[in-house]
Image (tube, rainbow over all chains, first blue to last red; front, side):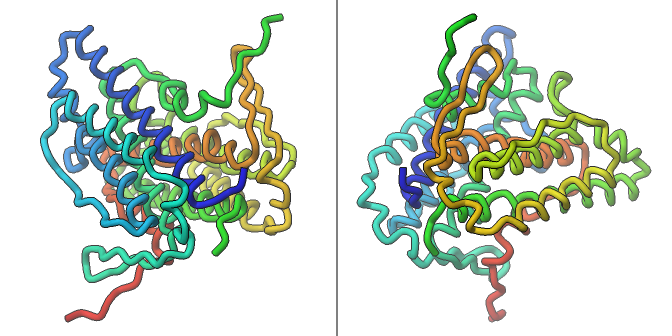
Length: 180
Length: 180
């Protein structure tokens, strides 16, 4: 395999979005089994001034789409901050996976050296090439929201382990050895 | 910039380890200002069966070193699971940064196609090339522990924002525009 910006993007966002979908399902199962209001679980947060689970999921999807859009020279998505139901959140993750998997390798032509300019609050500007943008902006933000979603669910009693986080990310590369 | 496995590694682990060092300092400042036992803060966790802050930091360092060691064909480190003081944790992060920054680009020759075989619990084996190993094992584990360290501190009242997480990761690419 040739390491490329297309490969970095392809091997990062989609597997972890599938993780997010799995984590949401586990949360829903837990809520149902324990008589917990799923909407309330989606509004849980780790600190009063942090974003709730629903927004962590939305922001993970945002950063995945935004990262790919910017390095492939498309119009970046607007951040949406809505109260979404469980079904809407799941659909958002699924749509994001579909959008990203539909992109051909060709869309990434020139992505490596594409000039990225991202205006930030406080009259600041993030400037880099496409590869640096993925490593120094998009991917760290993306994992922040995926992992925080996991941490919120875990903190609220959902029975998860590291394997639930890693299964869709690493599963394709793991094989069961013959038992002794 | 040419996207390479060396670039992916260089642009991922060291910036986020510097974040981890900053987060620990913020935790120590908060503990001191609020008369909280720093050792107790290091033992905080988000769920009774999750690892405490001190181990999240140790595992982030482990995955950074392990990822680089395996793709460059060196002996991977053993996971250490010790009760470390604040000073020892900070020193561990600093040593990890030093180890990784000392590696030359030449050490990564052949890393992309290097065969990685990682035995897992339950008679399972993770098998991939070097690039897939970074994307599907090392980096997702690494971010898991960095972000969970942030989430533990945040959940315990330490005044942090996303900028504390992103500052060392993105800072080199952000410039202040002239005020209007």
